[in-house]
Each structure stands twice: as structure tokens, then as C-alpha cells.
Image (cartoon, rainbow, N blue to C red; front, side, top):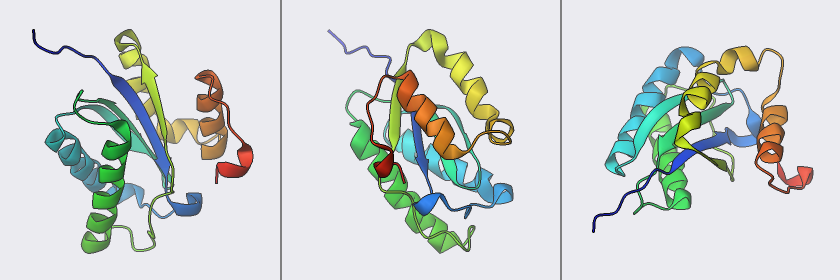
Length: 148
């Protein structure tokens, strides 16, 4: 029998120290690069967006790929690429950790819309406030000392 899965993730991570080092006008180039990483891992990208200090990626994760190795590959390869391309002159790297939240496929349109509207959300809410809401919404225990 063949393998059938539908593993829908929202992956969230920030720049090092949540610094505003990404230039919005150049983000589309980064998104295309990350899309390529996902395609190479047989993952399906539904949406990617962010602000000057963090990214949200909505993707189906192929069953042969672990979420930790996928995020590591995205962060390591995109860091090298960003520095080579010099699209974000002040970029020093990504934060050490990440958030990965699963969703039922019926929620895909809702979370895609949420991620598309990141700039609007962050007119009234910081990345840290948003991240804490995601952790609480998904019942994940955390210590605020380790969020930055």
C-alpha cells in the first residue's frame, strides 16, 4: 500500500534577537528561495510571509522529512544565501529556535489568510505577543525567559 499523509504546519521563526533586519521590499526574493528549499524536500508551500523580524511558513511536510531537519535546512541555507546575495545588509542570522504548529487541512484557508495579513496584524501586536498566543492556542507550555 502507498503512504498517504496530510501534515500541515505553520512554521514561525524570527531574526536573531528579533531585530528588524529584513527589508520588506526584498522579502519576495527570500520567499522564492525558501520555496525552492521546500520543493527540494518534497514539501508543498501554501503561504509564506512575514515582517522585518520574522517569518511564517504554511506548508505540507512530506512524511520522509522531519520538521527539525526541514527548519534547520531552511535557516542554514537561507542565512548563507542572504549573506551571499546581500539583500538584507544588517541581517546577522535567525533565532536559535522556532515554532511549528499543526493544523487540520480544513483550517488551511484560515491560516493562509492570517499569514497573508502579517503586516496588518503587527500594526497592533508584537512578534512576541503573537508567538505567545500561538503557543497558548496550541496548549504548549513555555517559560517566557526562553522566548528571546
